[in-house]
Image (tube, rainbow, N blue to C red):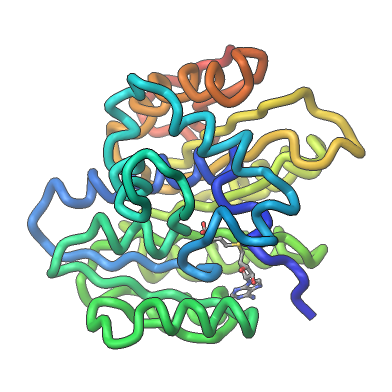
Length: 288
Ligand code: SAM
């Protein structure tokens, strides 16, 4: 039984990091006119109301998108991300927030495609309704990691795969690593972005190490923690592990993360941009 609902967390500090990096990656893919596919294995409901019982119950978005939204001079790295959030809303009133599917849908071109899977009954229905009749988007109520090998390599031969599980099941970290090893063989030129939470530092580091040990090259880890690590404190940070990131992403993140830290953690958090499996000549990382 799946109990996780992203509606409780939409627009929180982890979504801001994930979705702003996602928007930068889509912008990089658009540098070439050739079509690409975006695959979202754990898509959620597509978009969210910030006035819902879910959002108000946790109020997490107040420590996330609300803090970014009220800034008068956000960095250029947030341009597309904020344009997509703005497109969900009227004027300066912040009432809705795009999940990864709606964010990407707002940023792609007519030649690009989205393939989304979501397993939770209500969220899968919401996702299907959101994109009903949209020929650029395919939605499946299916296990995302089972769906992935069926879609790779994509006919476009260019693509971005977002793997964004809720990690409700103990074995989910293992399953993500196994899925990546298997699909990478068939689509080694794809961009993969894997989201992870920082809840227990040892578990986070073990996951990053397991991914590094796969031998898959070009792994870039981008992480932001708004509070010190500590068991029992809940999610204190989050990160995105990229395989084959766009070449500018590391330097864009190095500009973006200090800004995000100031806005989301009052400058008291920690962040890193680090090649966990470096490419030749790459900067080995930057730590605060
Ligand atoms: N990617 C979304 C976004 O950024 O807006 C958020 C996704 S949320 C973190 C994870 C989602 O995965 C939940 O909606 C959950 O119902 C769904 N889920 C859990 N297990 C799944 C599975 N095996 N296959 C597909 N979706 C799954």
